[in-house]
Length: 321
Ligand code: RIB
Ligand code: CA
Image 1: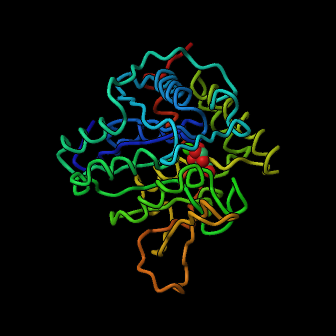
Image 2: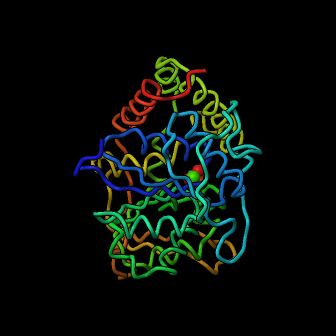
């Protein structure tokens, strides 16, 4: 059901265990009109993350989802993946169905541009991977900026990083792309590690997921257990942060996060700091604020949204065997 209160949304992602939950939340919630899922190399190579997106949509019964592949490397050509967190396939931990959801003939930026041109209302772009596709869209089609409502991205950090001591994976993978997005002048919401590390998949979350019953929750539980294992091994975290759906939840219910407006820049040249987001929370630089930075999460409300979405999909059209 597409109502006037629905937010027209494009989700650009690099599935990725947490991107998978972002896709499911965006697809299931009645307040979102998911126009397309586009993919970018990040957690895995482009072909892997794109196949993962198609497999997830197939498993969840999202047969009509438009899936389009985008950049296979960063703007400067770097290729970086995260098998230590997401495994060799980019989504290890449970068997996934052969993808029946088709791949669009055109590339992600072409598909997004057409959706922006055709949408009756400005479109929100959610980005939960490196910002390469979004930066390319802004550079290739600046005329379409008025058709973009805002960009809500999972990335960066006001504090420490997770890929280098100061840089978060999505921004570190393509700092130049993040720099272009941060300078674009559009309304930006940053869901960085400060807020996403409050979206922890605790044993209670696992039990709530399991109790939904059915193939989809069981598969998600297996995938999430893999993700929990790598997070515990790599970071010593007893419960994994499910980063990406926080950006979607913030679109569905802005009150699920508390944001502060601040100047945010990205370091491009530092030997030890490249890819770090510099968040001026106290205005000491005198720079104009360009980002709403999410710092606090209503984790109870977040997990209610996320698990309700899984239940809806499990009851509606998800594969059952
Ligand atoms: O740093 C966490 C982010 O990088 C998440 O979006 C995860 O999926 C990876 O893309
Ligand atoms: Ca991601």
